[in-house]
Amino acid sequence: MAYAEVFTALADPTRRHIFEALLDSPKTVTELAANETVSRPAVSQHLRVLETAQLVGVEPRGNRRIYSIKRDGLEELREYLDLFWSDILSAYGAEITRRMNNH
Image (cartoon, rainbow, N blue to C red):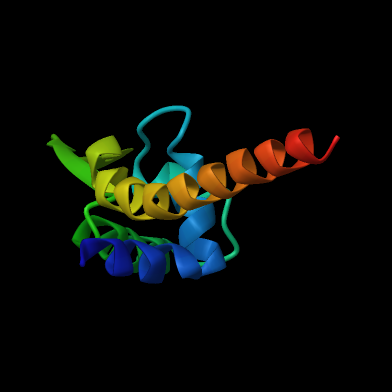
């Protein structure tokens, strides 16, 4: 049930903002902290939670660590949400059919 970890990790607004900041390109903690109201150590803690949830990866480069989104980390969450999406599409299709049959 890894999708539960993803929900938990992204529930925090600061963590979600940090995650979204990585959409454009990989960044260091310093780069991420520049756009946050929390300290660099706090950003590092948030990144650890995101890493544990398999949402970000880290690549050491010299004395820096570069963080990036792990898109495959969202796969289990996507599969979970697709369960509901299929139900929604089925209900939508049934409603269209019902309305067409009533006219």
